[in-house]
Image (cartoon, rainbow, N blue to C red; front, side, top):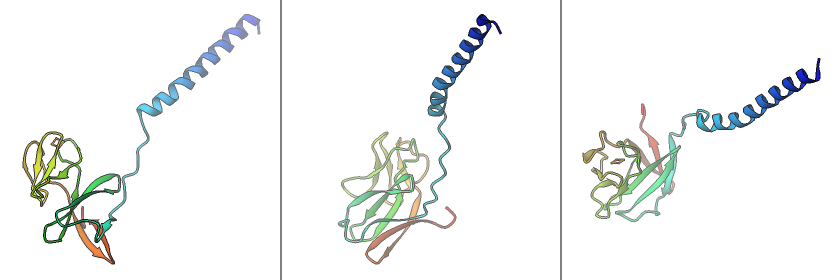
Length: 143
Ligand code: FES
């Protein structure tokens, strides 16, 4: 092999290696690996005495937020905190009468039904159990 040919092949191989070295992390960034769907169906959302009546808490449920609401009579209710419009996290309004999404002023009632604004569907409702001082939230069967 002539020196000139060797240098051409060497430079071409080096260029290809450099291009791959730069392109691979960019491609991995742009196309992230598929994350397995969170298999979480049940979590401890709070301690039983953690929330005062009328209070609420955002808790992690798998990879998404949930909202635990303690009613004025002490009862618990849990819903997905992911707004059904564009996915912002909802919160309980200070008057404790409705659930509000600040992104586009979406409003849900305490049952999670969409009552005004852009949300197209109700919030997903969860089942709540109080077990040994823990408030346990679980997805309804079939959800
Ligand atoms: S994301 Fe909640 S109202 Fe738009």
